[in-house]
Length: 296
Image 1 (cartoon, rainbow, N blue to C red):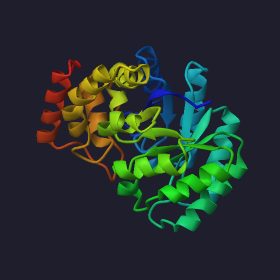
Image 2: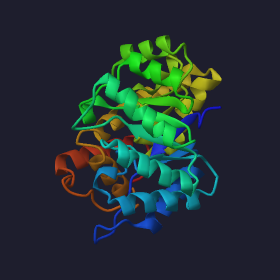
Image 3: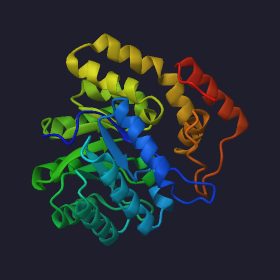
Image 4: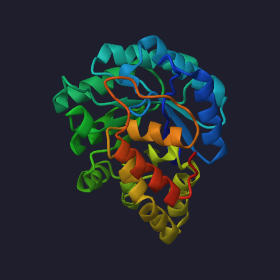
């Protein structure tokens, strides 16, 4: 059984004025998401600024999310690292808190060969009993996990069950599904490609867009899976300009700005990320308003 089908939100990590994690606000965001149809909470991913959280903050965010969600939807923890031992440590801790699954990004900066990727993921998977979704995002990591590598891991490691594919290469997604014979839980990692990925056998998205439009992102997937391809396609196309605005600067700069425009007061991103350029902020506000998302 898949960890989830539908739209999982790659939730932001809110900070207060002192740049500390604002757990009360995180709880508010979680409740907003669940009330508006989100199918899973993904905590401490790229959008959650995991790279600038201390290990203590990282783990506390995961623990808090598990307790706050309280089994209402699945919780998936981002516990990847470019150090295999660190990823194992974070994954084992997250398992002890009661998460439902793990999202493991490919190693970044030091990268890895395809052989190294197999060794990395196998070691992490063997350290826990939780289902694992691999995360391929070469634009950020400089490391592309090839379809043959994905297929090898899925076939040979029992608890590696899925992939968040954010290469932006639809031919690569098709080859993954071909080589795995569809025996993988495929999630789009690109909001602009939700429907194309679903058309190849995907079962959902791990989404930035869901932070600001949870119900509509959920509906986009649900309608497709129900066979209402026209409504799903129309939602995809409707949100393309907003998706483009959400990625006109490095994620999560725009999505945190969008949530602030919506009145959520999630704070600023941590350095080295900085606040959004005024012209881009105005563009973002306009696109939110065009999608009937209220701003303050």
